[in-house]
Image 1 (cartoon, helix red, strand yellow):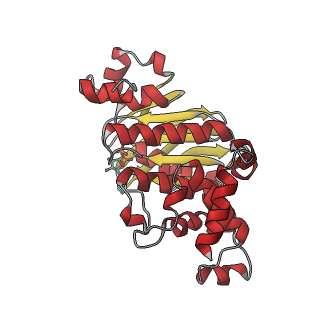
Image 2 (cartoon, rainbow, N blue to C red):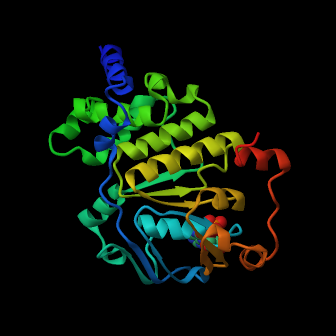
Length: 296
Ligand code: ADP
């Protein structure tokens, strides 16, 4: 039954009449808010993980956060997700100050932020489609929550999940177990799950650090494509400067918790790199750099 439904949907979403334009309204996220950080800081005990970071991120921007290990990149993402609270300053999403959120308002914020992780965070023994449907949980209310416990999502939710998989080029894998997919495919499923959540902002913590450059490039291309199509803000920590240069509109450079660079890839010259990393970071080797540039 499920397979039959999926074949029908496959026909619908892949037929010429039902092209990306037809799929787009389902996929379009509500407008991303302006994100304003004003002197945001985070202290863990005696450790200052973030020091008075101020920046504005505009809707639809693709922002990379770079810096050495321990510079505060993940802490900044966690503050944006309100997985943790800044200990000073403010972070606003539009008019909403995140520091004051609790209870239902905090849950709503977390639902509106999609997180992508280095290790994909899929439930490996569940089918791909079920993993993507997890993204719909925040949209299920009232008695329907009980139906979801029996894995009975509505036709609309299943339709959205399949369309998200189609966007990530994985519709034909919907009924496979997640752990039968390659690392790159699993990360694409994770992105489909986030799209199904219909977030207002995507936060990605080292999304390609576990992948080789070719797969990393595929993931970054997909993320960039879907974000641009929906005018959705993406903020991603990236372990390698070359990814930031290739994909970001804007780069934030952190050093020991301080924001020492806030500019475009073109502004990121050798002197600024040394300011961020304390030295020039290792370049990707020739073959990897070629793969990233699409020349391999
Ligand atoms: P990055 O992502 O750039 O590697 P992090 O944001 O993970 O850096 O960490 C910044 C600093 O905060 C580090 O010194 C780290 O040890 C510290 N830190 C991060 N999370 C915690 C925590 N939960 N408790 C205590 N210290 C933490």
